[in-house]
Image (cartoon, rainbow, N blue to C red; front, top):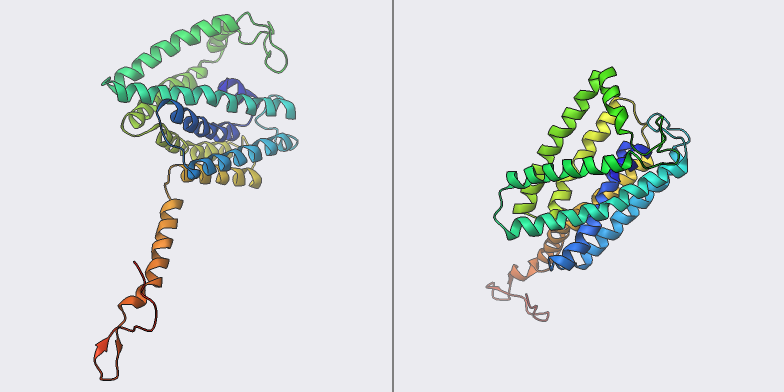
Length: 282
């Protein structure tokens, strides 16, 4: 579902919308891991939802002038791709919570878990690809001679005619293995939410590559949506904003009670403490 959405929308929007998994991770974590969702978590989820709405609305409009990376210049197709990416995060979040519950409940090595995920993923992909090979598809998902969702018979001829296609395939396999291993390590020793927080760092690299290769145009409103998403993600993990709030509150309290230690001289010149105000309880 995510790769289908990627085919219909922008690469930067695809990566940013994956942050929506944090909302479902919080909900599933409260249900299956007995995690407590405070007001801070709900506020962060609301902030992330606002960022998602901003990005989706901008994508529908910018398709009119930014057509360099889309196969179909249709706002409805872009909106469909974005919705597919967001909807796929429900299953992604369920997988994250299952990984966390299983890895922390058993003593399975991370490398072994990564290997089994790769094996089952390969088998399931082959089964799904065989089924989609006979599934008729509407526009814009039928860009092949047989007008089906995924033409497996066309894979080998394309690779033979263009051997450079092996490079992205090999890079995808290696990067997926490294990504899954690093993600499972974070989940095993931390949490699924921290896994998504670290995963958000990839957005900077993807944006840099997209602009460098001129696949997308710079859009200020999209940058604003990205900032809103990052604010929600950071607030959810109590990474920066809560610490800033606590530091500011502590400074204000220190300034308020600083005069308690100030000694004033009495009429005899001896040091004393002013008693012309009611006692403060610290």
